[in-house]
Length: 223
Image (tube, rainbow, N blue to C red; front, top):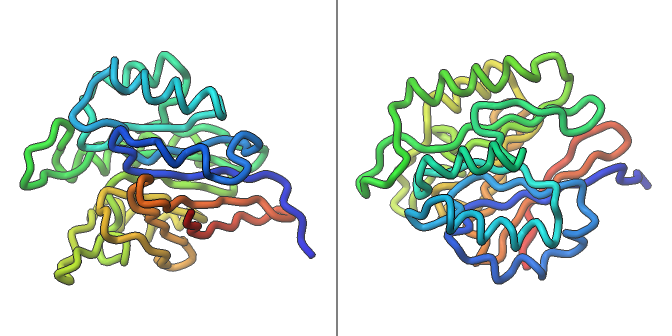
C-alpha cells in the first residue's frame, strides 16, 4: 500500500460561507489549504480578513487568490499575509510548485474583478516563470479551462477560459484546481492534467491533493 507523504485540501467559491470547513477531515493536519477564489460576495479587504482569519485558526498554511466576486484590494491583503498565489509561483514542497490565476473574464453580472482573456494569459506566464524549474506543478485557476467538464453549465453550454486551456495544453501541470462555475463540480483530464472543480464549499465539495511516494494525486471529496 502506498503511503501519503503530504496532503493539501483545495476549496473554491467560499462566498462568505465557511460553515462546513470544520467538517473537512484532518484539515488541521494538512500541509496547507488552497483557495481558488470568490472568498467574498463583492467584498473587500475587511470581509476577506474576517473569513481568512477564521480559516487560519484551523490551518495557517493558506494559498489563496481572489475570484471575480472579490474586490481587487483583497490581493494586497493576501500579499501582506504571504498567502497570495495570483500571478505568482511558490514552492509547495521540495519538487512541487503551485501557481495561480484569479479574477475571471467578463460575465453578464458585472462582478468586481473581471479582465480580458489576454490579461489572464499574461498572469499565467508571470506565475509560471517563478516555478518552471520545479518538476511537479499545481495550477489554481479560478476560471476553468474551456471545453472541460469544470466549465459546463446545466444547459450544456461551455463557458470556460481559452487562456487557461492553452496554458494547460502547453505546460501540462499535474493538477488544475478550479471553480467559478458552481454547478460544474467534476473531475476531468486535459492530456495528463487532472482538472477538478469542487463547486461551492457550502455544498460540501473539496479536493484532496496528496503526495504519494513521489507522485501527485488528486480527487474530489464530499462531506
